[in-house]
Image 1: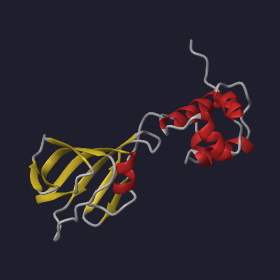
Image 2 (image 1 turned 180 degrees about the horizontal axis):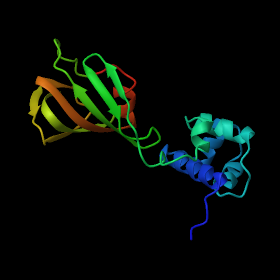
Image 3 (image 1 turned 135 degrees about the vertical axis):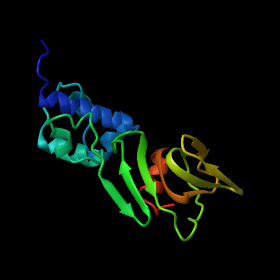
Length: 188
């Protein structure tokens, strides 16, 4: 029979996972929290008790809430329950956790009156068309991506995409640079 997992074990595992996912060394995280690298290491390995005075700066530095670190309920550590977010003619569902190295979204686009302006940013994008047709502007090229097809490209090439001839749904995956441009920037 499996032993029950303690809250300390869960928090220690989450802290280490978040730190490594964000590409932070113990020294990097220590600099952000004013804690010593050895204190953080002992917390991550379960050799130091976790207290609020260390949990708060760690959560802040890792961009999560203390509640998220302490949550032991249900299957939320596995199952993602996306909620729609609407902006202009797009509805977006986030399909991955904010702590991952890549972001996955489902997007439903309505055809617009104006074509989105192509943008450039560091990173790499990928999308798969579930339904409808998508017009991808990639530099000087215009490419129609049909249902069941995928597109993958460097985002250093000016790019934009839009629904063509009717609504379109797609799954897109991009890296952290793409997240800053697509999720925190303007749609398109």
